[in-house]
Length: 340
Image (cartoon, rainbow, N blue to C red; front, side, top):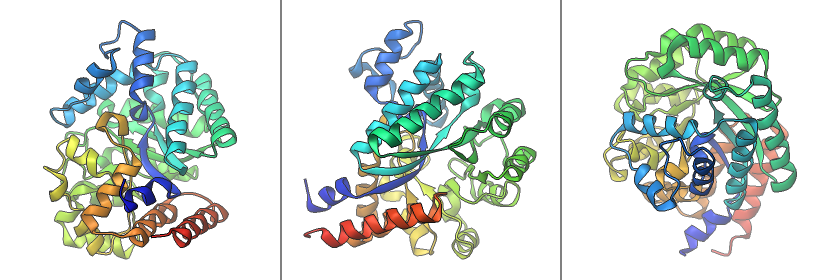
């Protein structure tokens, strides 16, 4: 282990772009697959590695939906959520905004109230037992269109769980333009939720502009193609709209050809506030510590630079002011005590 790798491993961190079901470890996925043998998801850990090799973004969505199909009752939901927090605790993640797609579970037969109770039980347990503070982003599965948007908005606004802080939009971008989702974001924003749609991952900068103008995005999920539009980068920098960057994910889904060609440095050089995230970590054979190591290499960062990157996530988070101050101070103290 290099000094910088060791530094990253112990660094207190926040994560802002990580998916609920997409964070299921191979062990949990295999356990759920064994419980539900009619699923196409392999039960063998070695076979799962092949299953999680994606041909393109559309194939990734197909695989992701297959894993979603393993979550069939409230106990599956609670177990998954708590175990995700356990994996985060091992990486010294102190705070995470977990993207949850309740529509997928509710339409598969889990009662909506039971779903909310399950994630909230896991959230309070994770904070009590593991020291990990979880908050929720409820996102619309965009590929299911406006009926899914309507249902997600109902779940978010009418059954709002205590940990819910934001409202998002995921799934494929091609064929699902952002403006059609404006009424649902308007309602969520009116209810006090923050707007955090995915945009510009597999389409061009115009999708990011749509997210900003039509959905009033406060953060952008991915935003990879923003680097192709200098005016957009300047806007993001001037208005301090953070990007939730997920380098390994972007390569795995073929959104960018390779890590060496990832536009992270262009974003940073333009003054954009970037945060580093893992997206669907087990599916991409990564974790948040690995993503920080990737970012450190691409940006040529030392320990102080990595700590500053970690503080970006605190700044961009929806934590309250005392929470931000505490985690920022913990990062500063960790850096000051680092012998390197």
